[in-house]
Amino acid sequence: MEEVISKNFIREAIDSDLREGRFDHVQTRFPPEPNGYLHIGHAKAISIDFGMAERYGGTCNLRFDDTNPTKEDVEYVDAIMEDIKWLGFKWDKVLYASDYFDDIYAAAIDLIKKGKAYVCDLSPDEIREYRGTLTTPGKNSPYRDRSVEENLDLFERMTKGEFEDGAKVLRAKIDMASPNLNMRDPIIYRILRAHHHRTGDKWIVYPMYDFAHPISDTVEGVTHSLCSLEFEDHRPLYDWVLREVGYKAPSRQIEFARMNLNYTLTSKRRCLRLVNDKIVTGWDDPRMSTLCGMRRRGYTPEAIRDFCERIGVAKANSVIDFALLEACVREDLNKCAPRAMAVLRPIKLIIDNYPEGKTEQIEVEVNPENPELGKRLVSFSRELYIESDDFMEDAPKKYFRLSPGREVRLKGAYYVTCTGCDKDENGNVTAVHCTYDPETRGGDSPDGRKVKGTIHFVSAAHARDAQVRLYDRLFNVENPSDESGVKDFTENLNSGSMVVIDDAKIEDTLTDLKTGDTFQFLRLGYFCVDPDSTADAPVFNRTVALKDSWKKINK
Figure 1 (cartoon, rainbow, N blue to C red):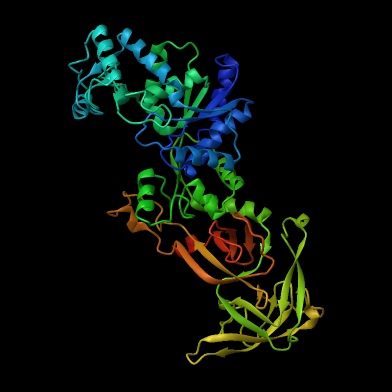
Figure 2 (cartoon, rainbow, N blue to C red):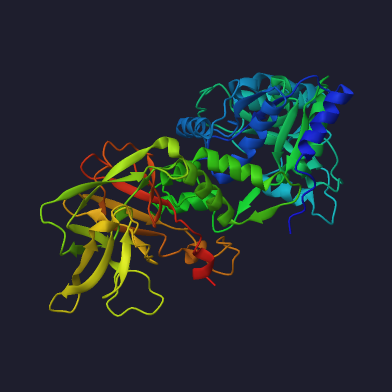
């Protein structure tokens, strides 16, 4: 069970800092590494980083952590910026860790001069061996006691490219017996011959994140460095760097619990495999946990921000139920999405006593939750399309849709009574027949009789063809990772996560559609227009069903 310390524990810390005069303003930053696409977990960090600055009338910068040029790409920079803007947040400045490379390098020189850093020749495997374990202390590197002059010379030669990648590193000199492994002489610079997307080939040595991060924060003027809980054990190193370098107003790091959402994966490595193995169509596949995937699926930024607000801020990691996110999406779309009628698996309904060639326009509300949106006109004629599962020839007692002798309401139109059906030579129903009561126009009976079933329809003469993609959760278990008792996480894929319907019918009012337009298809769920859609061949993605049927199905 999640241990919620306080939904305001970050605010309490900031209030204390302001009250005690540690800072006189609030400045935060969101520091993503441009090596992938943002996912739902990042939405929480974004909401906290930008939200805290907004709450205190401060500023929040977007700062890309580009200290590892082998994994970074401008494509990700652009995608991250688009996602943040889509969520509705505004940064004060766009910055990069590489903006501070000169400051970080100067700090490394300063530590060497103070005897707080040294050049080490141990191999990566040897460094791990010397580090020790959680229960045994590490041992000093044989290069730990090099003189300041020798370390300065070697570091300069590293910078000039005299040594091969991995031949030497610069390490902080702290305490090899520390109970915190992060404090056992961590590497702060390594040799890395890689073209940087901003600085080109200027640098041959690059700082490690744990060294670059606190210096970037403080030089930038960040007051509160808000980060996820896995950095809690790194905070002593964060504070050590700032203290030893000698900054007068060092930033303060505060950690919060990450968002872990069941039935999803946020691991970049695993998500990349989903893309590369073509298990999904790309990073923006509507089944992905990426923000661009959720945007394509039809999730609204308002719903995601509401979700982040509802789960609050905690100091202990926990797993959030995916159903809560879907509930936030439903709640938001219920208020704003126009209603429309679509038939996904059509069958003809013929009203035998309705005049042939006649067409009516039935007036219905655009959105009953928002009367200000007005009304729309829906075409009605003798031949309609209805859902095939809205008819059953031999129906059970509690079946309240069409069956011979039973009367139902056609949404907003008339009462109709089923009289029978047509079948092909194989016994498959090809059309359903009924009669209508012309006195029930508008969907109510003047004699006060009631019907228990209401079904939707699309006029056959006016219907537009559409492709509909029914999306569901990508995985069929709560923890789909490799640790969930299977050899590979792909064994947990939900085979029904995408169903494509090519012959759906939609009402004729759905024209001039734009990518991202969202509708509630009556009785079916919320749907949005996919980027693959064209004027002549519309494509809709199911955003979320009207009700959460997942738990019922998977009991």
